[in-house]
Length: 249
Image (cartoon, rainbow, N blue to C red; front, side):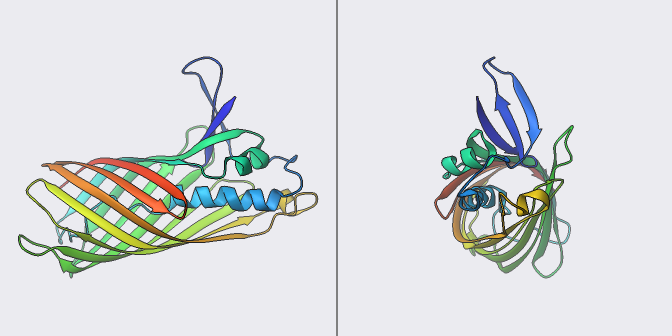
């Protein structure tokens, strides 16, 4: 049996021997994790951080006071620490995924705010995040857009640990008719804090901090009012592939 960690909300999906059959369980650290469990936890958190950090999924240009955007997105992040996942959960995990809804709103003075939210049916797990972005250059027909973004991501409903992350990045974009390519670079600070029985013998897990640089590139394809935005991101050794579909006005 192979398992895939799907976030909306750190949920493990087990692919059984029956094609197309899935079963969901909330993320749990195995009591049989054994020696080296702390190192396995650190490896898994690296993968989670790469999947869960706040994804830009938009050009750098300011949307303006009346601008608002709503969309659905998904992110696929192959794990780089599969042995760690096997030891930590007792299952083979191939990727960490995230899917949910997002919203963005333009404010005065080149400022935009945004948020995302995910929730898994029949579980208590949720993931959410928020961003604030300032367009140093708001962009135009002849001028590219340049923006700086600060963002936060958190989770709730996970019994064995609390997770949160902060990020800071700079992005650049330039529109060409209905196409707007963009690039960005920044840094992510993530923390996973174990709680409950996993902090006691025999596991004795302690807090893990993951600090990684990241780069990303994407393309906004606009079919007014609809938009399609694929994005590639690299954080540390992890690659992430995202796709957003939405509309703005």
